[in-house]
Each structure stands twice: as C-alpha cells, then as structure tokens.
Amino acid sequence: MRCPHCTTDFHENWFSNVLARDGRGFIVQYDGQEAFWHYRTTLCSKCKDVIIEIAPISTDGRHRLLDWRMVYPIGASRGPVSPEVPSDIADDYIEACNVLPISPKASAALSRRCLQNILHTFGYKARTLDKDIGLLLDEPDPKKAIPQKLRTTIDLIRNFGNFSAHPINDKTALQIIEVEPHEAESCLDILEECFYVGPAAAFARKAALDAKLAAAGKPASK
Image 1 (tube, rainbow, N blue to C red):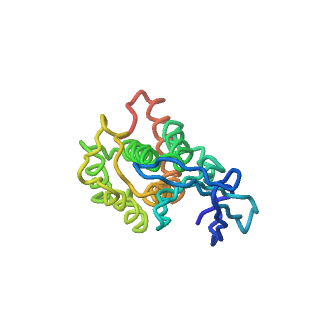
Image 2 (cartoon, rainbow, N blue to C red; image 1 turned 30 degrees about the vertical axis):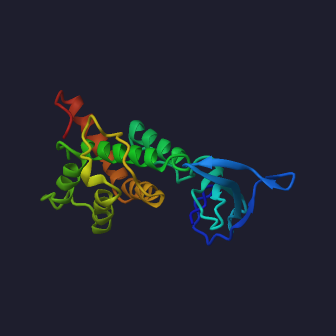
C-alpha cells in the first residue's frame, strides 16, 4: 500500500483486534446486520508512523468484513502540487486527497472535475468529460501530444465504476458515481501524472504565452 503519511509504497503487515469494553465487543447495526467494531493497525516501514483503520465485522459466525475505514491519519498525503498548476485545480486535487478515506465516491468526483478543468484549460472542451478525454487522445498536433503512458492512464478513468452510464458535463462534474476505493485512489495517481509528466510545464508555458498576448492586447490562447 501507499503510506498516507510519507507516500512511500510498502508491504503492510496488519494487526487486527475487536474494539471491546469489559471484555465485550461494541455491537453496531451496519447495513441491516449486527456487527462488532474491529480495528487494525500497521506501521510504515519507512517513516514508522502508524495507520489505523476500523470496520464492522458481522456477528453471524462467518466474520465477514463489511467495510474498512481509515481513521488515522485523516486524509491521504500526496506529493506537493507544482506551483504552475492553477489554484482551483490544485484545490480540487488536495480536497480529493483529503476526502479519500471518508468517501471514495466523493474523492473520485472531485478528481474527475479536476481532470475536466485541466482538459478545458488546454482547449479540450466538449459536452462531456468522456468526449473531452477523446479530444485529448485524438489530438492531431504532434507538438501537443502527450506521452503514451499518460494517454493510457487518463483513458482508464472512463472505465471506472459506472462512468460510461453517467456522462459528466459542466453541470454534473461533481456527480457521485459508485466506484471501488482503489479506483478513487487511481484517479489521484492519474492526476499526479498529469501534474508531473508534462502538463505542469505546459501550464507555465501557457501562462507565459497568455501574458504576452495580454500585453499585446490580444485574447488568451485556447
């Protein structure tokens, strides 16, 4: 897993136990089922900081895990956002990181809006995010083409959850769509690639060009 403190990938070794008081586990109703609260902890092998998660586990004899939720730390640490990235895009990205342990669906929604704003900044604007991505992947200008690896990872977003059944446009960019937790985290990975595999520098080039155009009394680039 990726450490939410220092962002290092490490092989986790979890210690798990029931949350108990006076020898009895705390019983809760979860999704119509009776369950005990359990907790688990692991240490990052690099920074040595602890990660703590809790989950209700069914009491029906099969001890089925119903859901794990990270309670420490709250939020997922990620690398610093390049200063060339516009503040509104950086803010959405940071918020998507912070909300990931609480709601993967909300995190994925913020990530999709973040990606859509990146694409719009560079002129790839259609009626939906799916079509925005299509414009980027079909870019005929070799000078604007992005690396193949980044092309592949950006295209992956269209395959997460029920994305294809929910067209994301300007009015529905924050629409909540069912996703798996690993899909929401992958959305953040993809945004990081967008920030650090070229587009951050491209933001800087575009800002410099727009400044020159403004000085000459011309409209900003598209």
